[in-house]
Amino acid sequence: MALDAYLQLGDIKGDSTDDKHKAWIEVKNVDWGVTQPRAVSVSTAGGHTSGKAEVHEVSFDKLADIASPILFQTCAMGKTIPKAKFEFYRADGDGVRVKYYEIELENVMLSSVRPNSGDGGGLINEKVHLASSKIKLTYTKQLIGGGAGGSTAGGWDSAANKVHA
Image 1: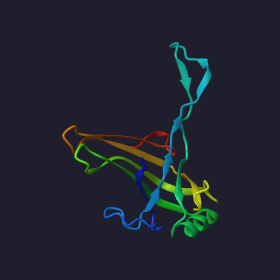
Image 2 (image 1 turned 45 degrees about the horizontal axis):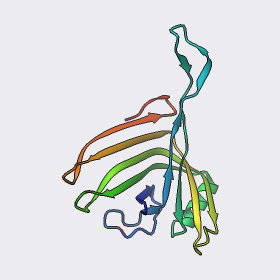
Image 3 (image 1 turned 135 degrees about the vertical axis):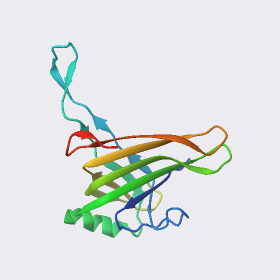
Image 4 (image 1 turned 180 degrees about the horizontal axis):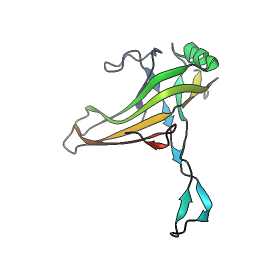
């Protein structure tokens, strides 16, 4: 099953023709995460001590498209993009597309753009890495009867080392 996900990256235009995501970038795969380093020592309360959270760069795979040259150029320039947003969709019980996950980034820099000759399918693929100072994740529950239910959000401001929601 193909991933149904899109990226809006500042004013960089992609090839999407989806009704809700015209000119967004279509993505094939997205990877993100956070690590909480632990100190070797134990606190006086008996638990581990923590360090500063290490929010990983968000990386994604895509096919070469109209955005490709501009992504390459923007990375080479070291230009900061104010905001980026990924939206992820899946079908509900009635087959209707429902947005169930969203990743919002602020103060975004393209830290790596790696085109490659693909997986043998004859198309150029790209792996792109985004570094950001703030990340917000939102999950929306899918109702059994169809449609979207409530949502929950969480995030992190790496520059301030505090919650960003």
